Length: 178
Image (cartoon, rainbow, N blue to C red; front, top):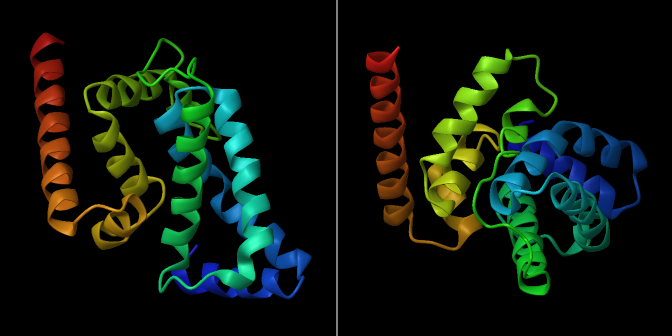
């Protein structure tokens, strides 16, 4: 979905349009879920966060003052994830053997592709995973990611470059080993 489409949907949701809510849900459910999963590493918590994100959008659609509505939505998702981590100390904040679910959700990719994505994301720090997930699945620009994660643009840019470098190095090592 484009930023304009998201903005229009949120505006329409603020005046009670259920069709816009449905459009927004089907347009963003996958990237929101993947972003939540990249933070929490728990499929069921990520599902809950997805639902809570949309409940929050419904409640606060008329309060959206962000220039970029996509950033506002992913900020809601991130904040909800942080709340879950504060309340539930048993939430795993590091990838485990089930983390390949991030690549598997609603995707027709081959199992090997899913495992490769999982292995690559495991090479990154939590913040780097969030940046890459927002960039790829959330289709956000680095300036939007900076706004969403409440970090300086230069820091996001630096971490993005470092992440890409780590991913490239990982792939080169895999080529040599295979």
